[in-house]
Image (tube, rainbow, N blue to C red; front, side, top):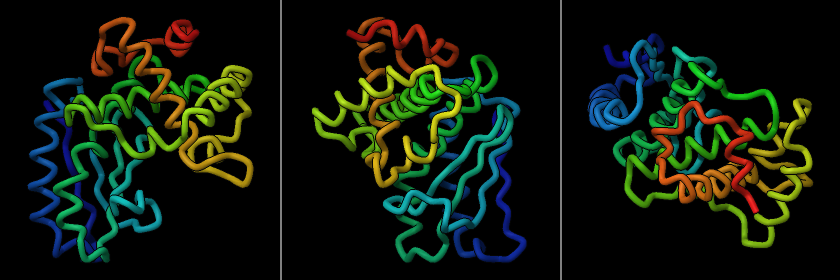
Amino acid sequence: MTAQVHILNASGSLSHLLQNIESAYQAAISRVEALIPIDGVNVLVYDHPNGVIPEYSIGGYAPRADVAEIFVDSHDPEIKLKLERHLLCVLGHELHHCARWRSTGYGKTLGEAIVTEGLACAFEGELVSGFQPFYARALNDQALLDGISKAHKDWDRSDYDHASWFFGSSHMAKHTGYSIGYAIVARYIRTTGQPASRLIDVCASEVRGVQP
């Protein structure tokens, strides 16, 4: 049994997008399920403009193993095209999290979160060959090195500021955590020859261990 989609539309705000959502979802889910186990996951799609990635007008969240939430900005005049272009990677990213929740979990420490997000970003590149999410390459070379150094120092901290690391703050660049995670995971993938779809249950400490 594959994942089941539930479009939450009691308000009617998604009525003009139902066909587009269903079409984009069906095209995406077949590609995702060919690579990772997603049986028993409920995919909830609903109108939530404040939760989307602004560049995509789509966003997501995977709070546990059996739920993936997909947010849509129904007011974007280009949303139909963006669903076609971006739903695959957004959905794949969140379903990779769901699969990881079943084994290692998302993680409680900074290092675990960085690796989990890096793996999900790398999985996007499996779904669309060669694709690199913009939020996974948001830092220049020096900022990336500095960020990795700082992450290693705070790797085991569970009291880290998740919002600052991943969404930015006055003292941290936006998407720092995603970019660091992607770089660390990419090195691990090159070293092991295993794609992100085969690394769902890899421990963060093992991924960290291949770093120079």
